[in-house]
Image 1 (cartoon, one colour):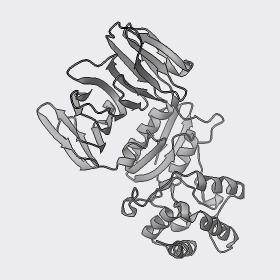
Image 2 (cartoon, helix red, strand yellow; image 1 turned 90 degrees about the horizontal axis):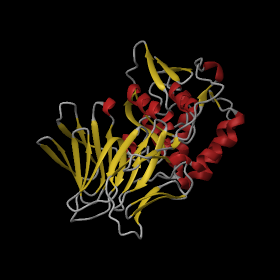
Image 3 (tube, helix red, strand yellow; image 1 turned 135 degrees about the vertical axis):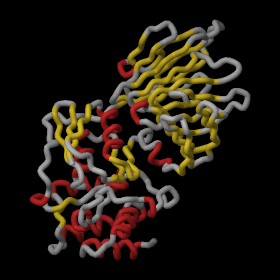
Image 4 (cartoon, one colour; image 1 turned 90 degrees about the vertical axis):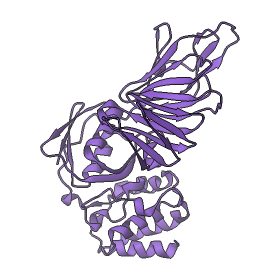
Length: 391
């Protein structure tokens, strides 16, 4: 694709003649760094075009341009145009003209008088979650990690536990010859996340409302941890010592690999997504072997299904994003509920629309809900820390 193609698609969109597929292609091309200068020119053209039915709030112009340069890099290799769906499932091309919550750059809105009345304005916006966790040591004592200064957190036998400057919890062998024993537990609350480097060097990212139990020091035979909730693992390679993650009746076994496990009980499905290497997923007598790019789904009846995975969507939370991939509003609100520590209540019939798009998890909840409301398929009302969802 070249610059001429982007200009052509932009012109179609301004004249309300672009198809949904052309809108998707245009939003992809506008995210490429090589088109930064051209995007500024096209935006200026949009401002100066009197015939357009799309208004851009002048007060947002600077923020819009900044957003273009802050967007995460998008490569042709990692994004397939055929898999990108517009975040605005029923909006007109005029309302969607340029944009692309799909890659979280910026979006244009209809004229203000055309916007639906919103009830999500709030005097005190509910802010996003952050690095928060509780460490429970083998002796039962507890350490609040988000309040803990950088440096030594605790020592257990020959193992020293340290909090690094970037907020990561690490385990290393201290000079003491006293053998380490017992288990540690790290728990993230709703609205929290945390990263920990286990005694063997395995790195683990915990999502909100999750719990990881692991030994202070791995011993001969296996490396075994227990998970509740969601975590992304980058397992240190050790051919002699397999690494096993036990979660809600499922066991994932690896030697050294990168994978994500979503095992929230309320979700109904356990999903293991493989990014690198290979893993075995075992449930009772059922066993499957995953290849990179595949996902194992374990249902309540303990059957296992293998599907092709959207790996970027699976680990978007770990990279600081919500990424919805043709997802229902109930699933989306479940993620929002955990990250912002709010309760969710549905009023009336739940919309059957499917949503696809990306938004930063650093935004406050109002900003995320407003983006969803732009679809005209769902409406929200904030009452304290309760979110009412209406069709």
